[in-house]
Image (cartoon, rainbow, N blue to C red; front, side, top):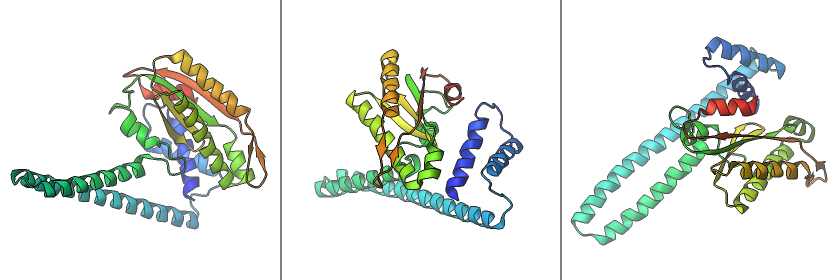
Length: 261
C-alpha cells in the first residue's frame, strides 16, 4: 500500500508543480482524483488502517532519526571536552582514542544522512536531497550545468506485466549503465530519483553542447538495448531524455517544469 500512496502523491505533486500557490483543498482534490484512477477507495476501512500503520512507521523512523541526532550531538560535545583536557594534559593516548571515536561518530552521521537522502532501491539521491542539499534555501541552483530528465515511459506497464522484481532490476540497470558511462567520461554529475520512473541527472559542466550530445547518445544506446531476465524474458523498454541548462541562481521550478511538461 505504501507504494500506491507514494505513486498517488507523486502524480499529485507533478500535476501541481506549475502552481505558485497550492491550497490544501486543491491538493486533496487532485489526490482523490488520482486515487480513484488507481481504483483506491479512500473511505475504505482497510485502506485507512494501512495508512495509519504507515504513519506510525514513519513516526517511529522520525523518532529514530531525532534520537540519533541528539545522541550524536551529545557525544560530539563530550568528545570535544575530552579532547581539550587531553591537549592540556599532553595525553597522546587519550587523543588517539578520541580520534577513533570521532571517526566512528562521523560514520554514524554519514549513515544517517544516507538514510535521509538516498533512494533505497537505486542508491541514487532522492527528492529530499534535491531540495535540502543540491538547491539553495530559495530552491534556486547553486551551480551551473545541465539537467536531464530520464523518463522510463513504459515502467508501469513492465511492472504490471512482468512483476515488481523485474521492474526494479530494470531501474537499477539503467542507473548503473548511465552512471558508468558518465564516470568513464570523468563528468562531475549527480543522479536523483524524482518520481517512481523519472530521474534527474545533474551534470555540473560548462561545455553544454558536448554534454547534451553525449546524453542523447546514451538515450539511443538504451533504446537499442534489449534486456534478458533470469527467467529468459526479453525486455526492451521505452525511454525519453529531455535536457535543460541551468545557471547559478536560476529557479529550479522553471527548469523542472520545462522538463516534466
